[in-house]
Amino acid sequence: MRKQLEEIQKSALETIRSANLAADLESLRVKYLGKKGALTAVLKQMGKLSAEERPVIGQLANAVREELTEAIARQSKLLEQAAMEAKLAAEVVDVTIPGTPVTVGHRHPMSLVLEEAEDIFIGMGFQIVEGPEVELADYNFTRLNTPEGHPARDWQDTFYLTEDGSVLLRTQTSPVQVHVMEQQKPPIRIVSPGRVYRKDEVDATHSPMFHQIEGLVVDKGITMADLKGTLEVFVQRLYGAGTKIRFRPHHFPFTEPSCEVDVQCFECQGAGCRVCKGEGWIELLGAGMVHPKVLEGCGIDTDLYSGFAFGIGVERMTMRRFSISDLRLIFENDMRFLSQF
Image (cartoon, rainbow, N blue to C red; front, side, top):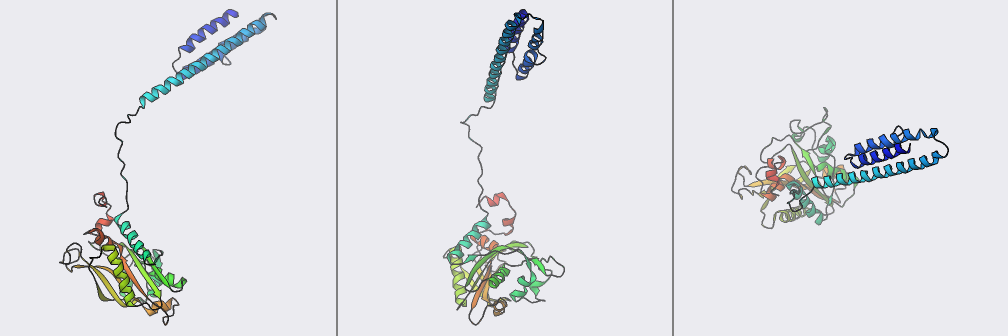
């Protein structure tokens, strides 16, 4: 039995040292040290030995088991180290090679102009207020002094969501003004930016979905002069001191008196072109003094308070700000266009 143990020891050590794979090493462990392994088979014969031989053979068997266990552990460590070295050699990185350039994104030109406009109004004491894009016709039209039968409520001009015409995609951000006047007592000074929807045909200056930023001021002693001064300050700060604008009379159901403010065409400098449709001017915003019926409908005493309101198309501001000649470029997501900003 001693001879068997010595032969197992010699054979096992040779095969363990020559193992090149972890799987082969595991197979050798099972072959020699497993429950059905060679060493276990020898130990099962211990019962045939005399009482004097058993301790000697048992001690030898334990010594062989420990030596083989240590040999397997050493070889396993060597295999792990070799595998790691091979992996490092295969995954070597040349740190002197230039890296892959990463393109850093930036804000859309619309976002840039909208944020700039908001900053200007905040600097003049306005608060930013937002509202729902899905609105009740009562807030979008009726409460703004636009009664049933008015052309603005025509089904061909508005995206209605219900058959009775009571729910729609807002055509302006003006409903936010009504919500604020219902919930807040004067003085009020807010601007409300957001998306609006109208059934406009797509062309160089129109889109069925566009953006507005509307303002409202309600306080004691507010006059048309306050409106004109506010808009002049805004336009001059946004476009520069040399920007040419003009005020002209107009009509809006929710303001009286009303006006429109135009900015000189940036494409032709007032000479007339396709962008301004030959007029030399581009309509920028509509404005006026808040109609007394609108104030009274929100519970505001018109004997004490008056106010002005205005609505600006953000796309048109953006076109003027960056000399963009076609509104469709703003929505087409062409990287050749967007990468310029």
